[in-house]
Length: 185
Image 1 (cartoon, rainbow, N blue to C red):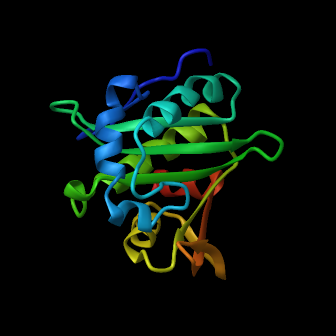
Image 2: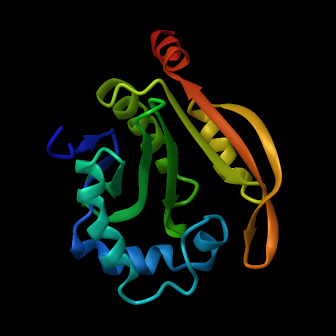
């Protein structure tokens, strides 16, 4: 696949990021509540970091390493978050990651975006498995994963150190066969 496709849901458009999105990424991801629940997002969010991050997407997509999408509202293209898959070609699976800006929490957008990524990952990328994890102190993310059909697979106590505090991670996964079965029900 040479061009990253745009994905549509009822309320969302998932599209490749552009450099024009950088100010919104910095503003939304720069919220402490976002950084607290993610491994790699810094706080405060430094100037230039969003542009640097966005500039990696096209190469990583072309090399089949990852696919990252801007999550936008379909009706007006407002950027509300990010979602992506880090692809492991040797084992035909990918790790799902996402964040949604705080003003858009509790509206079901993340669940809708995750379902679109499952469709893309299983039907277009032909993955066998998608897995994800969330910090133990972020149960809302776990609810999203469960609503989308992922199964809780375990816990790794104090697996991550975030801001000098050890944090549990909760592991989830879904197989292509389980995804296909859920779509046919």
